Image 1: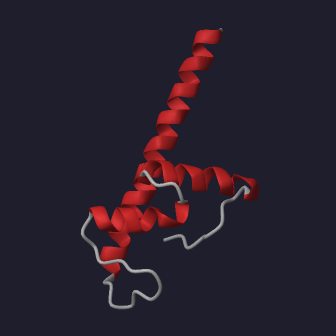
Image 2 (image 1 turned 90 degrees about the horizontal axis):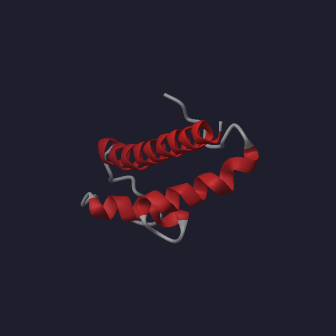
Length: 87
């Protein structure tokens, strides 16, 4: 299990943050996890969440990360199709 909290390419942070906000349908990427938690009826609060079971926290991160990966794959496939049309 990776605990890397920074992207491999430091300049990619702003792009990843905007993607996170896009998949969660929020304006601020910092609000994304709270929006996902609300949709899943998980009582995530700002600040300390020590009472939150790790399974619930994992469900939030998994859904958010999974949505980001799906969107990145979709974007990559679209870019490949556009490159195929150019040749």
